[in-house]
Image 1 (cartoon, helix red, strand yellow):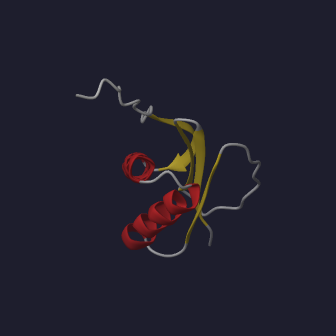
Image 2: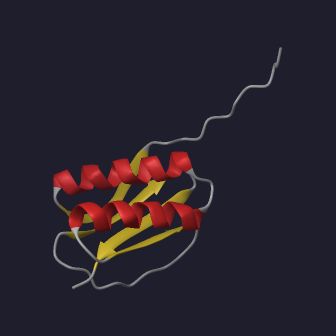
Length: 96
C-alpha cells in the first residue's frame, strides 16, 4: 500500500486582463484548464489552446505560455485575454 500523497496542482484560472466577450472568456478559461491538466509542457499547452481556438473561433490565434515574459501585441477587437493558472501565465489573442 502506497503512503504517497499525490500533489495536486492549482487549476483555478484567474483572468488578468481581457478584451473578449464573456462567452469567449469562459471558453478560454476552460481551454486553458484542459491544456494545463493534460500536459506539463508549455509548448504542448500552447499548441492545444491554439488548436481549440482555431477550430472553434476561426483562424489565426496566437498563444504564449510561460512564467516570465513581456508582451506588446496588436489584437483584433474582442479577441484578447491574459490568464494565470498555477505558476503559468497565458496570453491568447487574434490578429487581423
